[in-house]
Image (cartoon, rainbow, N blue to C red; front, top):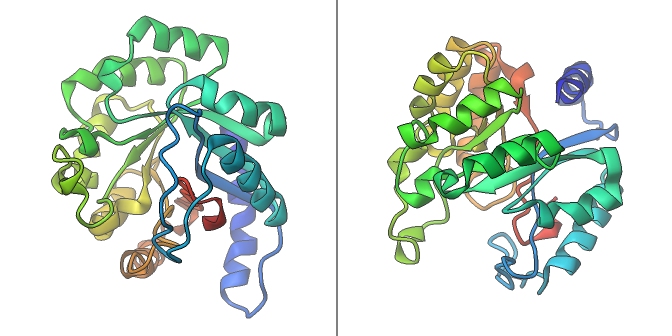
Length: 268
């Protein structure tokens, strides 16, 4: 992951140059937010919120099409998460060093701590995230998560925490969801308690984008990704002002690209 950061920072001058011209950037890209599935946990088919078109129907097709879009768009490295290493294994086989192996969870407390440690030591996990605790109705700073943060700090495993909201009306099928637990300020206690833990705010705070930018000013080691804000309808209402704030606050060099293609590879 240090190499990821170094490469991203090397790209910043190029990206800044791109922002000031009409030229399309064609260099290498790192995608910090990709999802993988097994046949058991793939939740499609579902309509794409941007196009209305139905997704692919299974995990294999999802993976193959995502890999195609990654190649077409010169994505040379992706942080790919799954609910288990089994979801990510085929991606590792296809891309080798072109992926960072990540673990997705809404309820990390349900994961056996010793098994989690074993996965880290065996190299099956290089990043913990996406951690979507607000989908389960509690804050990322809940004490139940402390043992996982401790292990990640000890083994230098970066953490990606879901911030912001979700699809409008998510509460109808997931009554545990709470928007308030997507507030980036809830990550503050984790940062202070585990100063060696490397954290990034997934979705750049979403609804709370200004607080995400403020947090990045206050905590110089905090990063953010812009995943989903860059393609889901109306999410640009958060993305554009966030990027303006990040530039104004001089933290733009810690903003990372992500797609969050979920079950829609074309989102890449």
